[in-house]
Length: 218
Picture 1 (spheres, rainbow, N blue to C red):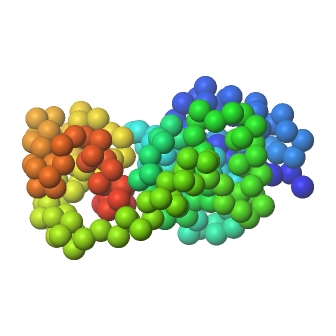
Picture 2: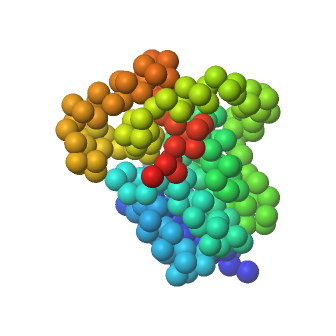
Picture 3: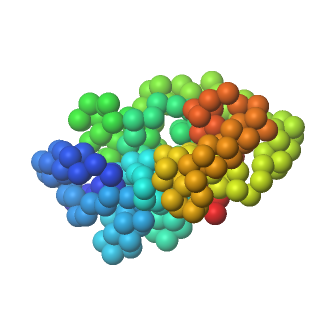
């Protein structure tokens, strides 16, 4: 049986390269491609793929994490394999919480990607070795204190919006355009949020947003 694959990535060259690789396999076929999460969701509904190969960050469109959750709700039997450049435990946990069946880096060897597709198609989870190690060594540390939750609640709604959009990969300029505010105001909201949360960098802010599920914040 041929494995029907949908590729979602915001770079056309990546979609083309992956399509060539996958279509060269006797048991696989790329039936559709998408440039962001929204298009991936729509194509999934139209084509009912067996596996969606999904990038995480596809600005300015919907993120892969958000699309994964929507696809899994609409098509429970569809398996989502996240293909990303982010080698970070926060992404691993967030991806699995969102319903993805696997997580592999874009730097992985071609045949590792093919193996990962076959693995999730057959109903098993696929994690590249370092991600598996992260899950084992960090799982118990995922339970955070009530103090951290209370710190999150002191953010204003606008600060939560800004933090969410930063985590989704949008630039300050893109956030300003979406929220109809100035770039300076965006930076001000970001800085205040970081101060309230006791965070020191944009990277720490992204990690915090992923951990708190702020990619789903509307």
